[in-house]
Each structure stands twice: as C-alpha cells, then as structure tokens.
Length: 383
Image (cartoon, rainbow, N blue to C red; front, side):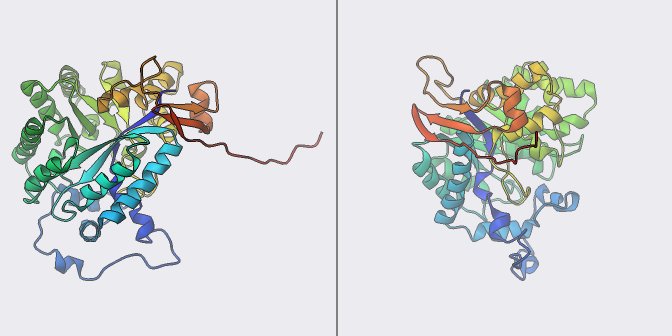
C-alpha cells in the first residue's frame, strides 16, 4: 500500500496520562496544590466547558500547569516516542498540531522543531501552530502565533468555535486567514467539536476560503456539530465545503466519545475526507497507538463503511486522501514517486482491518525504516 498518513495529531501533549500517573494506581496522580488560586483570574475559553460535559477530560487548570512545566527536551522526547509508534505502524507522514499559547509559550513548538530535526529523515512532518486556548481568552496567543510561523511552523492552525461569541469566532478565523496570507501557508482549523447546532464556525471558514480564493489549501477537523444540524442546512454547509475544495479530517475513534460528523454524506458528495489519530494518552483521551488500521476499523463501523466499496473508501482516508490534505507531492506507488509505502501481511484491505495485521516492511523515500512480524503460539487441537 502507499504509506499511511496522519492528517491530525495533537502529538505534543502525548503521554500525559502515563507521566502524570493518571491510570497507574500504584502511584499518586500528579496533582499540584493551589491551582484554582494560581489561575483565579485567568480567563477560560469554551474548552473549559469540556470539563462539564465529559468525565474523561483533565481539568483545564491542570492542563495549564502541565504545559507551563514543559521543556524542549521533554516535548521532543514524547513526540519522538509517538512518531516511533507511528513509523512501526506504517505512518510515513504526519501533521503535528502544536499548542502555541501563554501557557506553553513557544516551548512545545521548539520541542516539535527538534523532533522534526531528529525524525525528518525518516518521515514527512508538518508542524501546525495551534491556538489551543483561543485568541480573546488568551490575548498573548496572537503574537505567539506570528512568532511560531517565523520560527518555522508549516501550517496555521485555528480553533474558532471555542471563542465566547459568534463575532469572536469570526474574528479568530479572520486572524488565521490573514496570518496564513502573510506566510503563504496552508490552514487547518478545528471546527465545532460539540453536539450543538449552535456551533457554526465551519460554514464561516468555508465561505472565507471561497472569498479569499484559498481553494485546496484549507482543512477542518472534527466538525461534529454538523451531525446535529437540520438536514437541509447540513447539506448547504457541506456544499460550501465542497465548493471551497476543503479537506475534512475526522478522528472517528476519538470523536465517538463526543460528536462524529456526517462522514458518509461528505464522501458521497466528493469531499476529501481523511482520518488522523487526534490524541494519544493526553488531556482528552486515554488510549491511542498511532495506528491507522485501528482508525480504519473504527471508521468502518462508526461511519457505516463495512461493505466492499466502503472498505476501499476507508483505506483511501488513511492514504491518498490524507496525502491530499497535507498537500504531499510525489505520493503513491507510481514510477517517480518517493517510494513511501507499507507492506501488509495480508492480501486484501478487509483482512488488514479485520486482523489488524503486521506491517512487514515500512519504507520511506526508498529505504526500509521499520517492520513488524509477531509470533503467536496456540496449543494444537486433538485429532
């Protein structure tokens, strides 16, 4: 197969649960005292609402304290561990979402740049500067986003739906488009990750894409609120997305805990839909193996793709559609491509999803960089 593509991964926050002993009951969980008082006058974006809606979410003041304690080497080490998982599972390219805000400062970004230096010879990596805490709730972020692009971020990220009002959501998106224009960079938004028909930033981003002529250079992840819209309005929004030539990234294995968007309808309309890991053991999600076959299994079930043509469509989501989302050149199995590919221990995509098969050979740029061959032992039945 062409190598697997991860179009959306908050990789800089990986392994929080392990490092904070959140699930290791032999040790007390990391819980620094006085956080409520420490952050008493810090404004909270709509991300704080997650604490009220989902039991698995780490309290936002803990998230802030954790990010303030980052070091460049700590971030680079954890990103490297996640990339190593991905390489072993056949991931040959990844768009890394890196928090840029007053808590992480530019430390997470610098750690990502170091990880990119270490792993850039093994896989294609893009750094998306991401305003996780919003712009109006965290006023320092705008300047830090500009600094991040100057330091070498590849993609302008956006999170408009978490701002306090609809007007501020639009102002957030406008800022991201202006920043991308200055640096001639692609954009990747996270829109409307909520079970709420009131969350409507995707349609503004799509219309802004058309107005600015940035066809094919804008992506959006999550978009779960779309599933709650009346069908007529949902179709209008999806047509906007199609006309804007946007790419959609869906993280089915994580979005099932919140709101899964209208994946099948978008695929049927011809919209480019890919899948990403989203989270690995971080503030929002306790699992994750950076394994595209796991994502494919989840999407085949949750998205209704468990039939022959649907299985092929799911495989497109973790290969060619992801490459299109990232704007990769020379991707595929044709002569003249980079030779980024994975050899699976099976003969059909259905078998790969059903058995979560070994990645016998992972090859990037013509060089074997990883491979897995598991051994299994089972006692023979009596005859």
